[in-house]
Length: 425
Image (cartoon, rainbow, N blue to C red; front, top):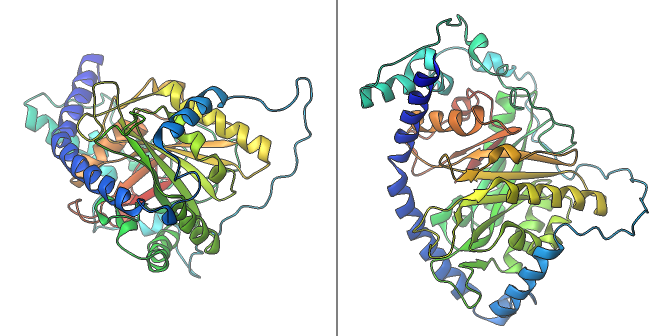
């Protein structure tokens, strides 16, 4: 495939992916409005807030400014280097596969379901072929087609680390897949987390997670909760940052829930006009906990004159890398288990300068292909954002109500590479 044809194929993919952007942004705006109102109502009484939550926004803004300056501070005295202690045991337990479970390759054989790899694969036609038909462009294929699916895959079936990437950490994705439920406890509009009480939610999550362990027993899945810890809002607030914090008592509820169930907690930040590190530093007390990790919702990061939920934001790679290095330093200082940083992206260009984002020996990085729609659009998006722009691991989101069809775990595991994090919203 020559460079001009390859460029045309990628351009057509971007156009197809953007067809649903207006609908997505409308849904985001409605969700942001509703959840902002609910958080304000939920947090209006001092009895519902922790000490930090009851502080005025202006004071929080001052703390944010101080946090930005302190993000990469080394608290150790110059010239002194502490001997690294042995790390504690992993604070999670995978759902074991049942006795006699077959390997993933056997479970993916045969027909039925949605072949997500075929929708990714230009040689197989599928989504790529449909795009050329839609635009009238000429379909091109590699001049040397590969005969087998194994040859066409970037990594062997089931492999989660992206092609030519390595994992030098001992983080949760090294030997396991994460299956997460996403949302905010105030409302079901932003995900399944708000639809059930915590204990029932965990029961459902474990059931969903167990299916992934059954299908891929070599990589048993771990249940995880992805809780929106800072929520972008359509009004500036007194600090002008267009973001509000989830009450501490709500965060603590899910800290306790995940710890009790040997599960993991990912705290998701929506940025508004705050910087990545302003929001991340506010979560430091939680990030010091062994089972708590970090996620960044990039599309809510807006500039002056823009409003989250109305304008599509973006985050620059160096900002994300600063968070990676902050987590790496936190692991060293606190002698805690290695961390995961997950970056949400639902359209090309929302994360700029992605090539500077590098995992470390203490921090894994997963690029999570977000957004709802049909199976073909989701497959192409995963190929464009994850396989074609590799960082280390890939993530994939399934929407129970908006996707058509709702993909089964077997469908998801056909993707190339296999998602290391599967999130349900």
